[in-house]
Amino acid sequence: MAQPTRAVRKERQGIVVSDKMDKTVVVAVERVGPHPLYQRVVKHTTKLLAHDEENRCKPGDKVRVMETRPLSKRKRWRVIAVLEQAK
Image (cartoon, rainbow, N blue to C red; front, side, top):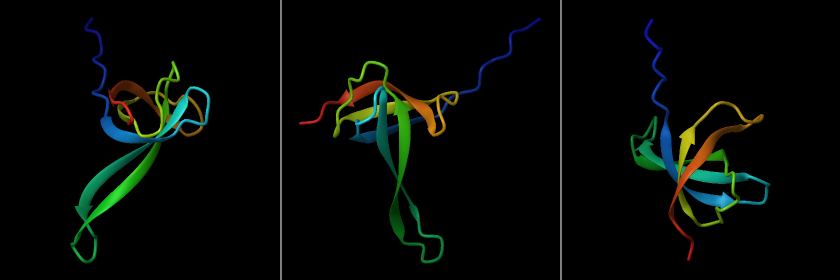
């Protein structure tokens, strides 16, 4: 019997905006798309709560997050890499 393959998980890159919680960071992810009515290109920002096991992320860090199972009420992402440290 073949093992069921796990679905490909979403990955996003963003900037850490808050690290006030224990083992949790808030990551702002920007995407660019057209306005629904006026078709102008606009930036949309989404804030994600991500799990940071070692508390290594600081505000301003550029991080990569991956979708995961629900860890709390709003936390469904985890930090997989710190791409760039804040200055």
